[in-house]
Image: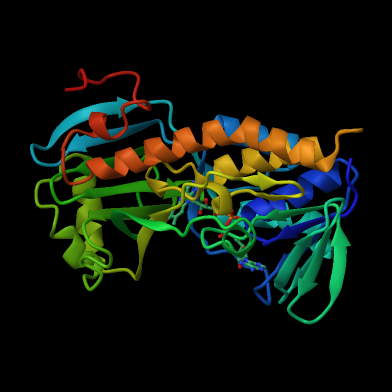
Length: 358
Ligand SMILES: Cc1cc2nc3c(=O)[nH]c(=O)nc-3n(C[C@H](O)[C@H](O)[C@H](O)COP(=O)(O)OP(=O)(O)OC[C@H]3O[C@@H](n4cnc5c(N)ncnc54)[C@H](O)[C@@H]3O)c2cc1C
């Protein structure tokens, strides 16, 4: 069991680990480079295993979270307008802000903002850390939860840089004025994906357009122009597409991923996007990071388990599942714009009301 643990990064997964450790009686130090802990107000899809990880982390007070579970998710072939699949085992959509607050509040006093490490020295039986404001401290373990461009991964473990997945995404919010609408939908055609989820208890559309191609492809298009790229949508996407003509503000991002061979070395390890940033197409990134946090918190607080053994065990337990999800997400992204059948995009996730995979 280790007592002095440094978590580099106060994003969702670093905070989750801090909360899980405190829940088990160990108070870590979290350093976050940003001057304040903030979170954008996007929705976040969490599946049942991710909710179970929150329970293991002691984040059980979720009654006041806004949430929405659709009654079904419709997947259309956008080239023909035909419904290709009806998915009932849908993830619950939460607010990222609710999740972030629930993770941050129990550990706010452990978080030091506006600080970055500048060097880590593995001394064998401890890690000496230099910070950019000049201080030095010694820790039993250092966990890099510092995101897709992780400093810990690149400067300490010599890990790879992130690479572009071949897909960009535009996201936007629109008000939903139809309280009876419980169905979410997406359409896939040779241009890309147009779809929406429902958040804030169903009062808001979280719209997405996924665009295969070079980095920054179609970045210049506004939401109304993006809608025009999908001429043949049917079903509930028809009204949604009409709403897009109101042209809400949108947020564009090229999607990157990073496949990391070495997650742990002696007393230093990676978690969350630092270890396995993946395409968001299957909406799994945070959830997989929460599962990392649950396992790490348990291993680092297990009596008589030396830190190097705990971290090597963590890599052994978590890496295969996380990398399988990365591969599934990447391969799903490769299908965008190439095949028009959503069943080929999400083959492992659709178990009913679907035609045979071609
Ligand atoms: C468009 C999009 C949609 C997504 N939708 C979903 C979804 O529906 N469901 C889902 O599960 N996942 C989703 N994801 C994935 C999810 O956003 C990420 O997996 C998750 O936020 C990763 O959290 P993290 O804490 O590991 O990394 P980050 O959120 O990147 O946090 C890293 C933190 O470390 C800090 N930091 C970085 N470097 C340093 C340093 N040197 N020193 C100190 N601090 C540092 C950063 O400031 C940041 O606060 C989506 C991602 C994208 C891009």
